[in-house]
Image 1 (tube, rainbow, N blue to C red):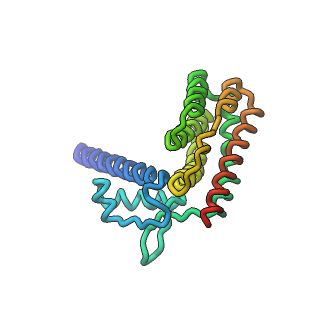
Image 2 (image 1 turned 90 degrees about the vertical axis):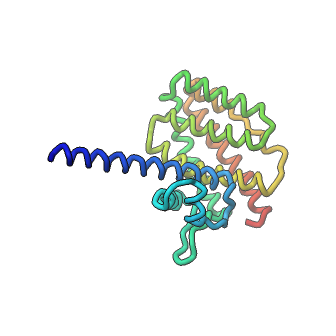
Image 3 (image 1 turned 60 degrees about the vertical axis):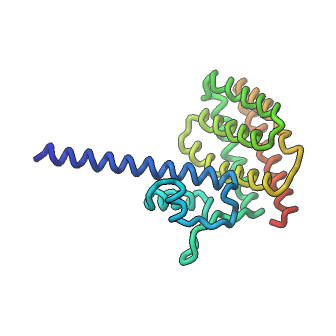
Length: 229
């Protein structure tokens, strides 16, 4: 009898693990589409369509949507539906204010906690980004650079929180890249920042990161203002 209950418990645990994997898969796919503006701001997300598109059940889709709502990537209107969050100038400023503190803290911690191999990877990412002339590749490399810094902070709470707000900022960049053509957007140079992190120069690295966040945020402000947002 005991073995029967243990067997049933193991089965339930397996099912729960399977559902968690499906929910994570649905979340990752939808998050990527929202951040990359493949689902544009204001677009409606229909659960049945998403279920068919993602090849998962309704529960994983709903769990993913609830998580994305918490992360401000979607908004749910009762009796109306779920929509990709609009992009607004005031939200861009709020995100910048948070990122200035989160990113500089992550960078400071990365200086002392990152391994030699991670610091070398950071320098390599900065070098590649400085060479690229493709806007989408430049944005992707910027994302990889920041995520590398978060991991190097060795602080899982900071990592999780910083990723949420970075995704909101990254979404603004992808949106801007679709509505405006600006040749000099790829002029991002993380090399001085990467060198400062590699040298464990906390003060210089933190200031370099703050300047990067300010500079990129200001460029987004200008584009969104010109676009009427």
